[in-house]
Length: 105
Image (tube, rainbow, N blue to C red; front, side, top):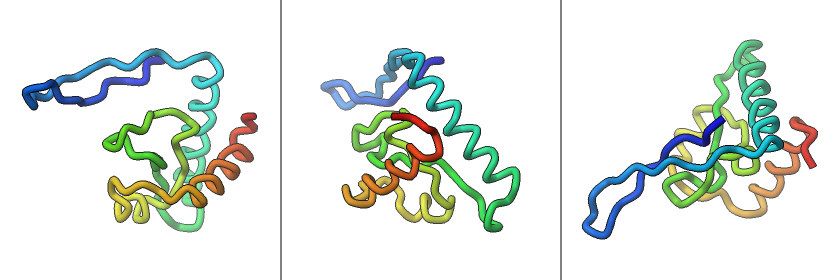
């Protein structure tokens, strides 16, 4: 599985697209678990809200699209957060919760 492409800018300010490297086997397993959990929450309509993937360090701020930079949050909260960076104490708490969901060390 590839991480996808990301948008960047060259020295002249022109948009360029670069392809990211492939996931390691461990990262791919963790990402699939994360995506399965998100699907489960939305399929069961957990708490009656729509859930989404949130990047703790937004992609626009240099964050990576990887399991350790993702949390599952209510869609409404994720939209209101926009591309702000989550404070580190909250990010650490979310990371610990994510590890419980994924059983990833």
